[in-house]
Each structure stands twice: as C-alpha cells, then as structure tokens.
Length: 445
Image (cartoon, rainbow, N blue to C red; front, side, top):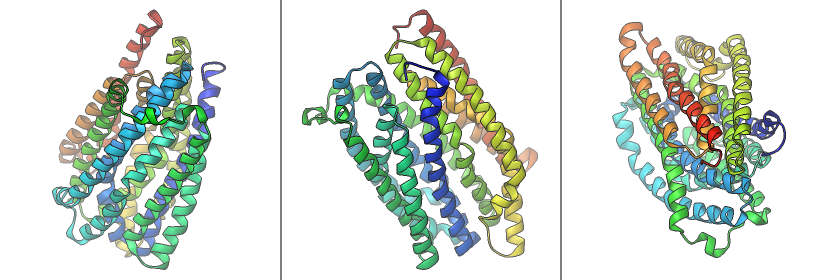
C-alpha cells in the first residue's frame, strides 16, 4: 500500500472487508430476527439485555488484536520479515494466555453484571444461557480476530471476507436448525454463533499458513520482552478504549432496561442494525489503519495525508447514502425483528424507528470517528484514541442520565450521537497535530 493511488488502495482493502462485514452483520441480524419471530418479544429483549455486556468483552478482544496488528503492518511496510514473524509469534502466545483469562473472567461476571444492569426477571434466565455459551467460545473469537488482523496487516482483505461468508452461511443454517427446528431458543442462537466463529477462525488460519514469510518459528513463539511490551503498549489502550465505550453502553442499557420489555425489544431491533449502519465505517477504518501503518513504516507521511483525506470524503458520501436508505425502508426492516400482540409489536416498532432515524441522520459523525481513530492507531498512536473513548463514555453516560429528564426517552437516543461527537472532538485535532509533526520530521514514528 506504499505505491499507487491512495483511495484505490484503501478501497481495495475496504470493499472486501465491507462485504465480509455485511455477512458478519447478516448472521447477527438473522440471529435476532429468527429469535424474535420464533420466540417472541421476550426472547428478543433477552438478546438486547445482553448486547452491551457481550460487546464489553468482545471489544477487549478486538482492541487487543487490532493493536497487535499495528507493528505487523509497519514491519511488513518496511520489508522486515524477520521482525514480522517475531511479532506474529509473540502475538499468538499473548493471545492464548489473554484469551483464557478473558474467558474465565467473562463467565464469572455474568450473573453479577446482569443483576447490576437490572435485567428484567422474565428475560434474565435466557440472557444467562445466551452469554454462557458465547463467552465460553472466547478463545475461538480471539483466534479469529488475531488471524484476520494479521491478514489485514498484510493487505489481504479477501480472506477475512471469505471467512465471514462461510461463517454467515453456517450461522444462518444452524439458527434455522437449532432455533426454528429444534426449539432451543436463545441457547440455540448462541451455539450457532459459536460454531460459525470456529469455521471462520479455521479458514483464516489455513489462509495464513500459506504465507511462509509470516509463519513463526519455534523461537518466535518464545516471549520477547521488547516485542511483547510493544504489542501490549499498542493493544491495551485500544482494548481500554473499547472497554470504556462498552461500560458507557451498559449504563445506557440499565436505563433502557427500566423502560420495560417492549421498549427493550424496539431498542434492540435498531441496535442490531447499528452494526449494519457502521459496516462501511469499520471497513474504511481497518483499511486506513493498515494503509497508515505501512506508509509510516515506509516513511511516506504525504501518502498518509492524501489517503486519509480521500477516505474521509468517501466515508461522508457513504454515510449519506446509507442514511437515505434507512429513512426510506427503516420501518419495514425493523418490523422484521418483532412479533407479539398487536400492541407490543406496534410499540416496539415505533421505538425502533425513532431511534433509527436519529442515528441515520447523524451517520457522517460516526464515519469520521472510525476513519480518524484508525488513522491514528495505524501510525502507532493508541493513547489519543483511548482518550476519545473516554470522551465517548462521558458523553454517552452523562447525556443518557441527564437528557431523559428534559426530553423523555429521546434522550437515550441522542446520547449515542452525542457520544460520537465527543470522540470526534478529540480525534480530529489529534490527527492534524500528529500529521503536522510527521510532515516536518518524517522519520518520527
């Protein structure tokens, strides 16, 4: 990614990621739709009551592995294959240990956290069953995120795409079998997700094994103090950033849980679409991170400047198109998640549409957040993105606690958008300051 048109190169990585994320969100959405249509509003609310808690631990895993991939992209951009192998080997060793620790901690925290979130008693048992299975599969999730991150660090966006296509097909088929066919409810949905993630991990591992120059030798797996410290120095702030965001989301979830099962179901329906709304943003972000890392390794700051600028403009245009589609078809889409009595269904759909319209109208703010946050991370700066996560946490929780007293439940919806805005207020100035320094002293990293 150090030669040629910046936008073309970014899109070459982002578009396969985008399609892959479509498939990833497809099976997330289908999970919710099958559970909601087959099991009803209560089961959908059980998934929603688990969402932010699941994202808390998943965000830690994704943050660690995303940070681990940054020095790999820089080593690859510099043509240093020996260092690349050492980074891969040490990252694998760290991932096994941290994955086991996260699995144990997440399982032990299920009941205390659901109690803390005031999860309604009528859905709490289903939430416990769902989380116990997905948390138990976290070593698989760690393996997938690490192998996919390594592939993306090398500029390979296609293999993670194919992995997600496989996972989506497996997940949907097993959802239909376990939930609709065997009647296993939310436990069936979580088992389907875990088995789909295993398939995606095995595929990425197979693809990675074909690149001999990334294959670590035995000595590369032995922990190296300097490399492990750098991996953790990059990974932990990203994990902390995601953790802060998730804790803020859990505080909002506690407020939502107090508004009743129907409100939770409508809120969940739109929250499941959240991932669809930000598919392109996440994909542009990962591509920009790889692009910035490789060009930093090659000492080409001007290319970073041109590429990020082009990605930001493209992101804004993409957000506008997605927003238009959500305003046009949002009611029909959210209605596909919900079944129940006419009163329950109409109430949940109304909540879902109101939340969807608020988020869709402000999507450009979210797209800039992903692009500039990942640009900074790709250049090795994970501290300012972590501080942006702190700003996001403060805005989301502060607004969710204060605004409902002024504008009713709409305050919960606007808290999400204001959280994105708070993060952008940190990220954009940080990026431009960082770029000014790099353009003056290109050797700095």
